Length: 176
Ligand code: ADP
Image (cartoon, rainbow, N blue to C red; front, side, top):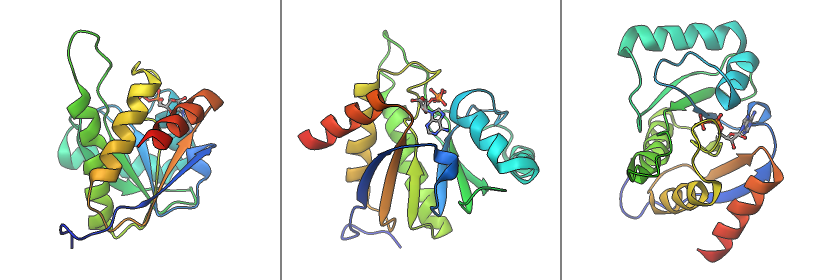
């Protein structure tokens, strides 16, 4: 149950591989077809094994494709986490402001986590890889959205792959 008095989660920033996290749910920076590929998506598909692949296929059979800015969960398969919450970030555009779609990935992922009963959730820097979003802006949107979203999730762990991403998230969090 979510209401205005629900606390915001504890934020943890760390470097690492999201597929290795012992959390209730890991968030995947997916594409709309949930087909895997490079970056986080491919890593989660590999680490999750056949059960993750089958769960994705079942989800696609049920919903078709996952629109940009939306979130949907599957079982994680062979990862320490129990669930994967797939979100589709927007591709960066210098001409059009797509920030609301990126923010939506975080707020909707937390809403799905609440539906699942997940209390610890690990996020990557959605859209900040192949989709080209500048890391500083991606960090600002990620952190401000999570801190503004009422949720029963008690810990949000940002798992950043490289030192520069970790430094950007750390700098943004210090300024909030
Ligand atoms: P998008 O297509 O949404 O840009 P990517 O997967 O290409 O998503 O990249 C998102 C971010 O995740 C990038 O900063 C990338 O370096 C990072 N990343 C890639 N693999 C992993 C991983 N296994 N764990 C955590 N972060 C990762």
